[in-house]
Amino acid sequence: MGLFRKKTFAVANKKPWYREWSEALIVAVILALIIRTFLFQAFKIPSGSMLDTLLIGDHLLVNKFIYGTQLPFSDQRFLAIRNPQRGDVIVFEFPGDADKTYFQRRDFIKRVIGEPGDEVEIRDKKVYINGALYSIPQEIHKDSQLVPAIASPRDFTGPIRVPEGNFFVMGDNRDYSYDSRFWGFVPQEKIKGAAFIKYWSWNSQAGLLNKVRWGRIGRSIN
Image 1 (tube, one colour):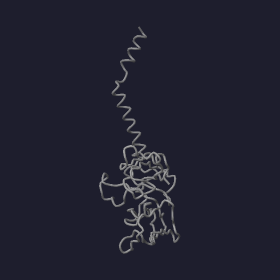
Image 2 (cartoon, one colour; image 1 turned 120 degrees about the vertical axis):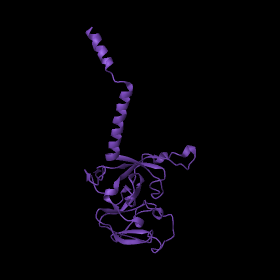
Image 3 (cartoon, one colour; image 1 turned 180 degrees about the horizontal axis):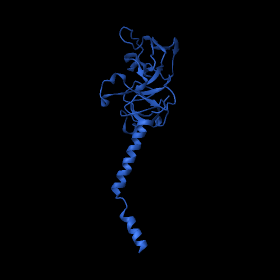
C-alpha cells in the first residue's frame, strides 16, 4: 500500500506538458534577452558601404561587451575590455536619429578611422591621421572622379580634430559611404559593439542554387 500511494502521489503532481513547455520557453526567452542585451547581437548588412569587407546580405555577430556592457536605457558602461580602436569595425546607433523614437532609430556599421584627439584630413581621397598617410588594404575606390570640396566632403575633408569621447568613422567602400565625412562624429555611448564574425551570407540576387555564400560563413571580420 505504501509503495502504491507513493507512486500515485508522484503521478498526480507531475506538471502538464503545456506548463513544462511554457516554462522552458520563458527561460529560453529570458536567456536570449540577456545574451542580446549584454553579450552578442546579430545584424544584417543592408547596403554596400562596407564593400568588399561586408557584402549586402551578410549576417554578422557583434561583440557587445568588448567596449563595456551598457545598461538598458543608460549610457553607463562597466567591465570594459578596451576602448574602440582605429581599424575596428563597429556597429552604432546613427547619431542623427537621436530625436527619433526607439523603433525609428537606425544602426550603422563603419570602420573607426579617427580616435579621440586625432586630427583627420582627407585630400584627393587619401586619409591622413595627425599628418601621416593612413592607408588600409580593406579600403576601395569605385569612382575615379575627384569631387571638389565645395561640392561635397567626400574626397576633401578637414583637417578636423576628433573631440574627446567621439570617433571618426568611414565605410571601406569610400566613394559610396555615408559616414563621418558627411554627418560628423560618433559618440562612444552610441557604439553598440565590434563586429567580429560572419555567421551567414545570403545573395538574394543570385540563382536558387547560388544564394548561400558558403565561403563567407564563419569568416572573421578584419
